[in-house]
Length: 156
Image (tube, rainbow, N blue to C red; front, side, top):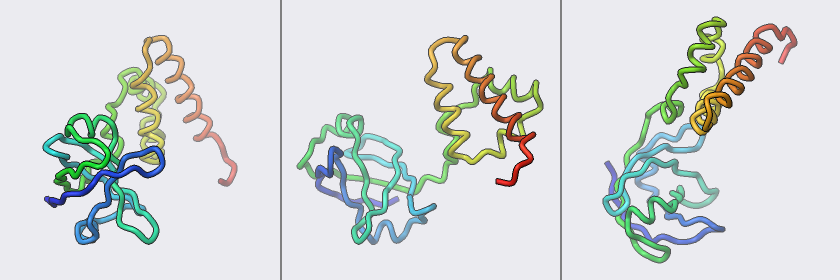
């Protein structure tokens, strides 16, 4: 667990803080990024530290984090962070309709062979759909794409 205080500043349209180098040096980047969980003034969050060329890693402070922390631009906030090794796709649960369709068409392995970010995108999209009919239509599209991928014999 790492502790630091930092002034919240604006970069572009986003609020952010710089994370001290001695902290990020103790963490393990994955493809340059560092997934973390932590607190800002006692408010919990999960976020990703972003590398900045020639500067410290940056932590973007979104609106829910600011509100939860009772903080604003220009304030100095207290942070506690630790590396979060939770797999990315755990952010969204497997959709029951998708799971049933994968089993029915024996495509579970094909779905698992997708990149973690692609699986997450699919699960995230399905999680935001409002009607069962829309979910079913989109699951059919996913199943069709997985079937095409299996039968596609072209060299990538």
